[in-house]
Length: 572
Image (cartoon, rainbow, N blue to C red; front, side, top):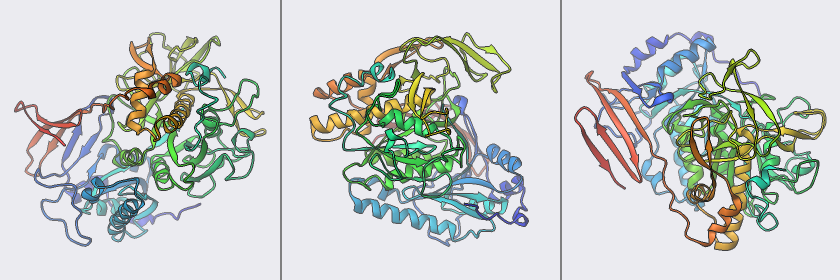
């Protein structure tokens, strides 16, 4: 699919000029490694929730869009022309809060409201200034390629609340199943009656462990390609990236023994192939990932006998030292919608060797973040890590693009040197060296049909996702209902084996599926929300500056004024 290029003649405003046109002042996040510069024109009395009627001019007190101008300027400079952005729109919050995702009528009403919000903004934009790439079904947002004139129009649209350039994300590249104790109940609870969506580089459905036929088939029952905008989520058989196929094999490949491969963690679960990557690469745009998660919600019940209950995403980027819900409102809303629909969302923590940070989107509070442990002793390996890794054995090298690597001896249940850890990481799961499915024939990772050393947090995430599917099948059998995503998180955390990442002394649970299933007979721990704490410097229209703090504590939100040493607590 080759979208038409925007007219170069429309690229007439500088970023500085747009700021002047939009009348935007400054807001800066101060929350650690994920600090971004945001600019906002705000009035403390104005609500962000009520939509403005289409065509109604913005009032003097209207809240303008929140924009990361540093990132926006960098994107325009790098592209030398139109930039793909994600635009978050106002939506009727009352309708959202009243939503019951189990009722199809509620879903239809919400989608109609989302479409109306999208139409209100798109009606004022012609294709010479904004070319749409994604219109989301369940998120009041759009993505598209915008030039400077189009950006100026968006910033003066009172229905636009957030604009950001699209980020480019990268894939996070038979002992693992016993390690997470997935073999104990494997003969009984295999993920039957549900499906796992693999949001990745596509799935080779011709692989005998993944249906062995065309798309769709008995194993891979549906999917889409949001990365390229078509309906075929299969990778190219000779040039395609095998990452998604390998992840699918770990999560839910059919039972069988080939070399070290014995099938997936949840071999009876069905699969949805949601290809988010661009062409044959291992890269994806943020907008395509949002579209992938959004698609899963819209198509959750395409096969009522096998609803989507799990999303596994082994992609990510960036560095975030705390919960990052404010980084991409549309992505966060995609996660919120999925969880509200009963879908557990998991994402890999990243392979940079960070000691205090996770990659995005695993840092979103509604997502279960998954780090990696070795599944066996297979000797020592050298792993490329980021220059910001605190690993004590980090050494310079010209081999890694990062310039640094860590020589690391392996051992079962040892946290891998590359795995990102932080105080808000959720769980660990097995990783290197995973024996799993590859693209058939000469394509993929090897000339054979199986990858013999797949790893990274990319492998850990589908191990955990398969465990969630097996746990849900056990819950449905024993309790008569599925667990909520919050209950799933609580069980995985409370029943896992405590492991310490020695590079930073962070202790977190490694998934223990058998213990989680056995805990179904007792009280399920109450889900505890990941705390959020951020400071923002806000400049009001009258040029007053103020630092405001936002902190979550259980189900309460505390808004504080550090200068006045006062605070306001908001309770449900």
